[in-house]
Image (tube, rainbow, N blue to C red; front, side, top):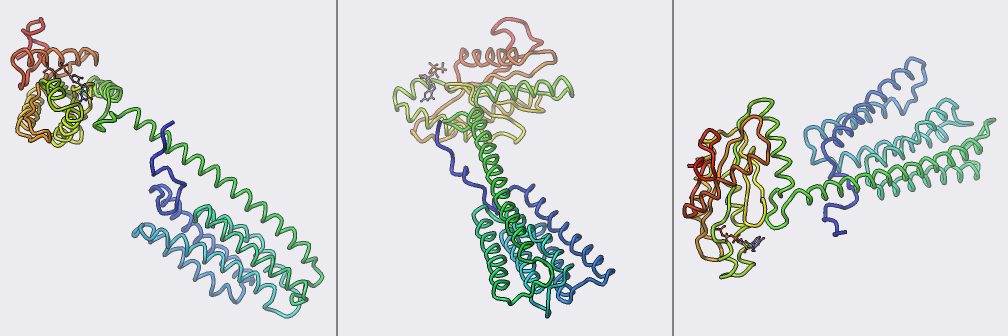
Length: 378
Ligand SMILES: Nc1nc2c(ncn2[C@@H]2O[C@H](COP(=O)(O)OP(=O)(O)OP(=O)(O)O)[C@@H](O)[C@H]2O)c(=O)[nH]1
C-alpha cells in the first residue's frame, strides 16, 4: 500500500471540520443552560452555596463567550477549548475541596453528593475539547489532585468525615472515575481509527478518480460525470456538450524532446485548459494525449467558441520545451435518449475529421447532418 499523505495525522483540535466547531458551540450553549437551570433549582431550594453565587455566573459567561468566539472568531478555537476545560476542572476541583474544608465539622452532604456526581464531566469535557494526549494529561492531573489530596487530608484528620463513611464513598468514586477515563480513552481511540479510516478512504477515492500525471479527472471519473450529466439532460433538459481534444503530432514531441518533455507538455496543457473553463465544466484526461471537456449547460455553438478559445490559446502558448504545440478538437452536443458512449463516439468522429483535414482545428458533429464518418461534421 502506498504511504499515506501528510494530512493522515491523528486528529488535532483546531483542524476539525465545521461540523465539529458547531458541535462544540452547541455543547457550550447547553452548558450555559445547564448551569442556569441548576442555579435556579438550588436557589429555589435554598441550597445555593456562597461560592456558587459567583461561580455560576462566571462559568456561564465563559461558556457563552466561548460559543460566541467559535461562531464569530473560529481561529480562536484552540483557546476556547483550553479555557473551557480549565474553567470546568478548576471549578469542580475547587468546589469539592471547599465542600470538604470550608466549614467546621463534617461536610454538607447535599453539597458533597451534588459535587461528586458532576465530577466525571471533567474527564468527558477534556476528551471532547482537547486532543487525546492532552486529555489524558489533564485527567491524570485532575485525578491525582482530587483523590490524592483528599485521601491525604482524610488520613491526616484535616477533613472531618462525620458519621458518613466518607473514605468508602470517595474510594468508590475514585474507582468509578478511573473506569470513566479508561472508557473515554477507548472511545477516543475508536474515533481516531474512524477518522483515519475515513481520511484513507477519501484519499483512495481521490487517487482512483484522478490522473497521476496531470492531477485531472481520469477516464473512470469522466465516465461517471458523463453519466450524471446525461441524466440531468434527460431530467431537466440541460444542454451538455462534449469536447474531445488531442495533441497534434505528440509522438514527434516525445521523439524529438524526450518523454519527460512530452509529460511536461501534458501538464502544461492541462493547466492552460483549466484556465479557459468554467467551474461547472469538467476537464479530464481521457488517455494518452487525449483530453475531454464536459461543458455543462452549454449548447453546441457555445461549445464551439470554447473549443476555438482552447485551440488558439494552445497555439499561442509558449511551452517549456520551446516548440509550439497545437491541438485538434472534436465537439458534439448530447441529444436526449443518447447513451454516453454514443456521445463520446460522435465527438471522436469530429476529432478524427479535424485530424484528417490537417490538424490544429475544431470540428463539430451534428446529429441532424447526413450520416457517415465525415459528412456529418463541419
Ligand atoms: N510523454 C508521454 N507520452 C505519452 C503519454 N501517453 C501517450 N503518449 C505518447 O503519445 C503518442 C501518441 O502518438 P500518436 O497516437 O501517433 O499520435 P500523434 O503523434 O499525436 O499524432 P496525431 O494524433 O495523429 O496528431 C505516443 O507516442 C505515446 O507513446 C504520456 O503520458 N506521456
